[in-house]
Length: 125
Image (cartoon, rainbow, N blue to C red; front, side, top):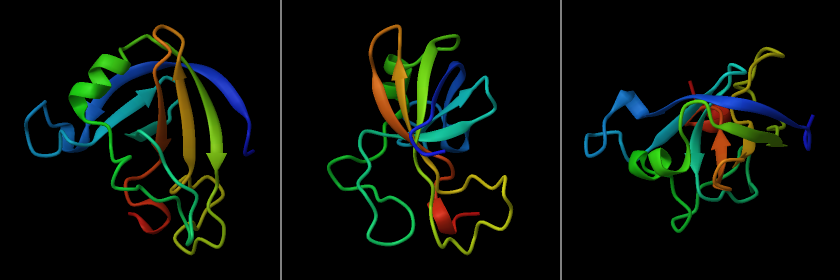
């Protein structure tokens, strides 16, 4: 449910296509959590005017270098569900999480980020 929070741990910090810092795809970072959730990290996401949240130019994705400074394996994090897309034709099953937006807060260093399940949001593959 939107607004629900829980605690979990970081399993792994990664990037799109598994890219290392400086490689293609390293400008978009991911965090995999021990609760089975994996999300793309953003500084800030704005409320949607269409299905799914949007990334603004100034907020953009968090790079792999930034993510490595913010999160480490085994860090305890608080994760809160912020948004579930409505009227999303791409979501065909109840367990489909595409387009969901989460807020993550790291207990170790107080770093925060927004995470979106699926890079392409509501319409993503």
